[in-house]
Image (tube, rainbow, N blue to C red):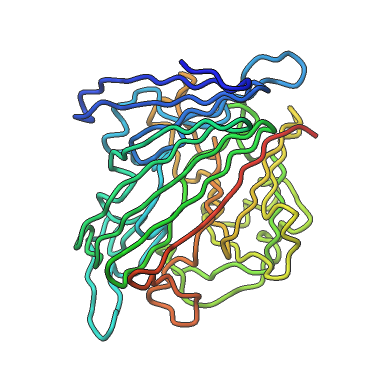
Length: 352
């Protein structure tokens, strides 16, 4: 254990037979008592414990598995970094320089979240850095030529920084020796009311988005932008459950952020009415995938000892347009050889 200006860092190692390598956990705690646990598996955001405003008792805000062996398959993509390309690539293929690049499919005919053995399944190296006013963990991994069908060797870095005012910063960077698509994100499941304390349907969500991407029946973007109206209108904020019944199976949609939005305001804001707890997301990405936990089905026990039911937690995934490799009207996801990919997202917790 190390201590620095009120910041505490502890590390732990779990031996999980199904994972075949030691699982290393790094817990960062700031002076306010906010505790963030990271994992070397998938450079994952494993746990967020926040003191209650009135009692000071810590509440778990991230849904996770009770049994770490589930990470050997991780059917819900809990916690981990997603890549090389987040979200869906239609037909698990795309054209690059006149050549068809075929990728392994892992969701029907499509590729999801970087393929069957994407970056979230890897053990990353890491180092800890303590400053006077923050503590950081930098994870690194390399994805070799042909990994999951993608061209080029891609070297990836993700730096988590915990600040004193309950802010967690995620800074991604990547560099390839060949042109290759890159779109990274984090797939943590937030339950800001507290894990096991109801669903996300009563929580208020505000999204500064004027459009969503139209989807086909396999949830792959068609290339069309639709106005974020009706059930998709979160500009003024509303309970997540208010209009969810209008959708076939809940929210799993990419919201295109307002290009002219005030960068000093959060792109997304979640508020739990019961606790008053809030989560703000600031990002430099063009949009956010909002997923309301539709495929959680109660078949797996979660970190609070209860089955993980539908709508138990939500994901806010900032990244580039999904399926952009197949839609020339979308902002490109292609990273040129030698060009540095950068992305920054900030999660800020509080009470209101």
